[in-house]
Amino acid sequence: MCTVKNSPADQTYITEDERRKCRKVADAFTELEQDEIVVVDAGKFGFVKLQYYTYPTGFEDAVTFTDSGALFEDLWEEWLHSQLIILAREMGIRDINYDDVFSRLSGEKKAELMEKRQCFKEKSSGGL
Image (cartoon, rainbow, N blue to C red):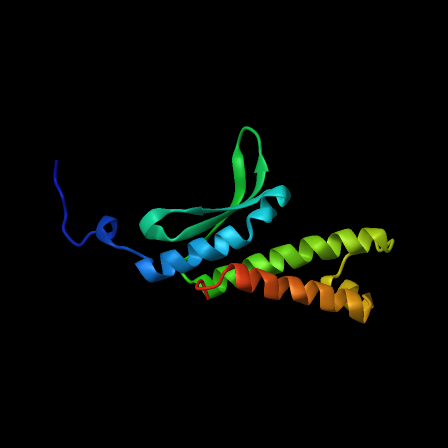
């Protein structure tokens, strides 16, 4: 067997510090699994967000992250969008435009959603 030094197989795409931070972010957003979104540790490649599972083919979408801040923002947006879809249905809105739905919410509901963002940040403490 021939081994090539400095090949792409030898490359690491995420630092150990970012791996630790990404793990905390992924753990903070575990509730997204109910929306068929899961984040897995892909070793030296980073963390992969898997989305839209269908049996038997598997996940339709996979996005790799090596930065905990980018992972947090992406997962926050996924969570917020899932909540806005639920609220839009409750409000009888058929054509969902996230910005439009958010603008129609009461100040109290907007504050509640933004408090959840802070909660996710606290759960990710040390991850950001």
